Image (cartoon, rainbow, N blue to C red):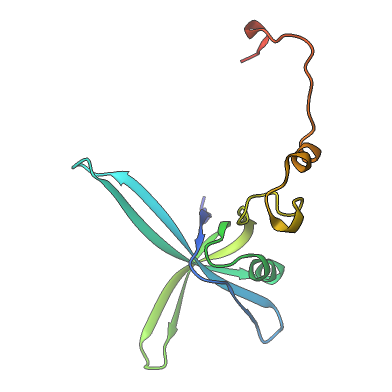
Length: 148
């Protein structure tokens, strides 16, 4: 059995680039940065940053171009692909990239309430109450009643 599946969450290093193929299909590309933090043998905190090239096709490429920008958080599900080509100087080149099969956009700047809040700002208390209804529990909850 073979499996080529990648899940990655990171921040865009630049705005996405949108192009079209000769056949008119949209193709987008962007780079995601991910951090790895650990404590070394010497007890010091260490950090490593990796950069991942992402290729996205069709409607998802248009959505990424419309809603993502440098610094945005995105979750990408896809597969690894290595391509080879010859550059203008005749040198053989290779790149490994993630071909996006599904993308999920992260929270927008200013919080997740921008559509409901006025002018994209944080919502007022009364707006939050409209979004999150209050639930009244009249009876007392006992620890032995909780199933876990």
